[in-house]
Image (cartoon, each protein chain N blue to C red):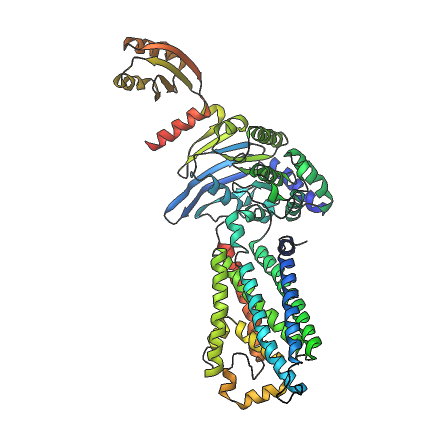
Length: 279
Length: 319
């Protein structure tokens, strides 16, 4: 097995042995259970005349609530990715764990790629698993399924990968806690800058280029909105675009191409930075 | 995979025949900002030799090993391991390394850590089982093979690190303070391992500040201080002088100062030790002490130990 795959396997194995996966699984099941219960309550809401809400009202309410829950879920995913990626390399350099491994015929680039790959697989699998479970629970509770569920999961997973990649880059130079905190703060700043971007047209585009997490979040929102809601928001003009939990357009293809380029650039920078690191 | 294992062996045979040394450096220098960690290290370690790299804490020993292994980049100078330039991946297939800061995955078992190193080395998968069993036996961890490293004492972790360094019968092994966490029995075991490596022709680069350890197993020694080699040679070269210890009372400080002409004097009150004193001058020394009014209780000439020589070298360096 090539060294980068050995390192990737080791990263996944560590998460499993340290019971990170088990903790995430239990927490996810709890959250999905509670949210299914909450969504189910929407179907029992009645109007003032005692009649139940019509299906389109239930769908609208569910879609809005789902967006808020997905925002929290993507926040937890971003936080987890940043916290796990922050010490990924720095902690092993500081503890001496990497010394004996790097004295083997292993390139530094293979260590970086292996660690990124291992964690990326975990982030992708977790996003797909937890997202599918949540959507299934919502469907069961309310009969509502967002219009583009696959795209939704891909956007949320990609957002986690952005934070993972940023955390890993910082981890090649900074201590674990510093790298994790910076990555998380950058994610929040990008989200706040994204609000301005939506409101003021093109202001804050730089923030989308530097850290595309907010652009991906907008894509996730778009994938969750019913067509009628999108039409209504478009009708509101600037006010509609200023809503941090609404998106009137899908991310342009050029942005998605930039996201791929961003991953390549950040991984290249991580490798270059770790190569120059004195151990 | 069998071919992978055979090629280095054939190459090693040719290299030994061609006289390519295990380690060679020319003016290897490392600076961290203004601090000079290693100042122009030039040395050669032949194949099959046990080489002791000796120095006080902070002398630059670990920096030298990390430079040789490619973990640090030299500021200037160059070096070769097994005939390959520093950092060459091919050479790293043929070396073993026990770091001073030894740490292994707490969530893996001892056997799993060794299997990981077999995979990274890389050794043919068919040989892993035998390799792991052999090194666990060598370092005395057979009973703990399946226990998690997180439950290991520091000494056991150091034994495991030594085991990892021995996997695949490397041609050159770097041991950086290999007994720092070990008890006397463990230290004895490590000396046996080093002798075993030497007997099968493996070169050993032993970093240590434990003089007795170096004295007992090394063919040749380099003493390093403040990043510079201040002496090097075989044990016989370094320890050629005689040391004389005299137990005496009744001498003033002025008397003792006059006696320092006989050799470097280590004054411990009633016990005076003269380094590098020719045995033929011992009667003359005793006569001088008696003439000064000193009362001599014991005169004990002995061969200079590495500790005597080491302290002398460091003292000369300070001057």
